[in-house]
Image (cartoon, rainbow over all chains, first blue to last red; front, side):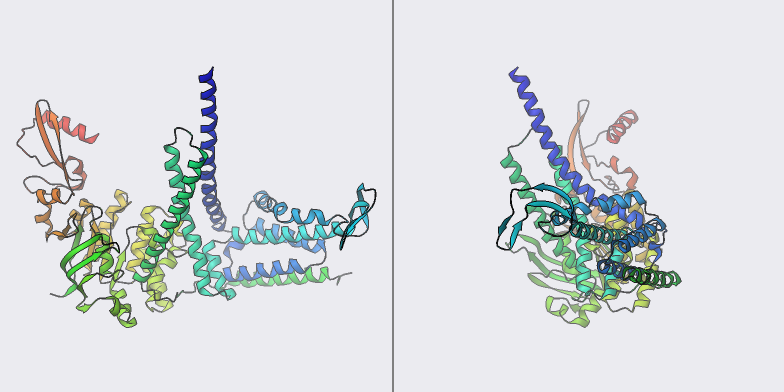
Length: 305
Length: 305
């Protein structure tokens, strides 16, 4: 009986331990996998993939700025529709694209938006009464009215915010899905981002994968030798020591990378060569985006009423 | 005889005083093919780093192409650029050498730093991609490459500078047999064009394929031997003393049999060098033992397993 209980206890603790290692490994693998998946879409022969990265970056930046200045949700939704059309014509599966964006939207905006729809934050015309208090309360500039309601102004504000966030994220996600990170970094130079900043970003992205593999290997090594659970203190020590090892390896690798750069003539100034060329498709794209943006802006400002 | 490198009494030690290289005096003629052989930790990589002007000896003098090579000399931009143009190093770990965002950018890095015009850089990169048969990798990010592909790109990025001397640290590390053959072919082609090749390795099989001269480093960080490939590789006692081959005993019936194993192309007591494919059957017999055909077949089966 006692033995059964002990074996069940061991089974549970071993499983939970393995789960912790599993989760860490899985998370590390997912980062790499997601990046590779993005590269898969970036390699497809779609509309956005054939555009010059500089043109693409500037046009997407303009569209995101446009979304932030729109005053009506309709024009923002139209921009979102345009974004979906672009995703479709770039061979990005629509359901995958929609899911990827809308999983993040509640995270980014819901927490801010939910209180703002109430009359506590946004006073206005009541749409729905949620509850009543015996009296109203006031603390200096803050007050809680006797009637807790969702207001029309609050709801409109929330809809606008969620629409803006989701459309802006959609545009950003579409850009990164259809463009390799390497190209995005090179394209940033066209936006006058300093070269050293772009190079640092690019190298960070590059070595993230090397260190990710190192971490995966350490966890795999541990997992392969795990036969019984360890005390939480031992686990914490091990995790802390691995963080230290990773940091040390990072420093060593940084030193070696610098040596490799010196070996090939690096003198502190990072020279690059422009590999971009603008084609007819890029001009057609610029024209389309300009026309669509102008029409949406006019519509937003009521020019067609 | 023009010397690519001339090392006089070179000594190097870590900051804590642990010696890495002891009193090394070596000359490397232009156009020669040298393999620096040594077990792990004998200082091979440090020696290459010193020859590439990445670390500097504690004592001793060194000349590259007849000119003194030192930290002070490399501070002169003109000398440094000239030296980097003439000497390239392929690192043991390709991950430290592949720091650019794409394969194309990686190969372009060296020539760009050395002041080659963008137009010429484009031609150089295309030529390297083609000659090393890696054109399909052009736009790939380094983290998406296999180890063999990374090594190919690392070699291409070094060769892009058209160096006169190619230093290679553990060139066969992580390479599958087919890529090893590819590497040997490349090194033969480079040698035909008059390039000086200096490779540091503990892999005796590649020494058999590329070296005309072998420098053996001992485990006390000094030069144990320096001579023609055929002389060094048939010196069992030497190879045994520097831990590059090992000896063990086993039984055949009532007879004790002592083997010397070298995982390489082949040493026989008669001094012949056999082909790499037979490396697992490499033995030199310590004492006479007349194997019958049947026993040899049995031995072969055992060794193959």
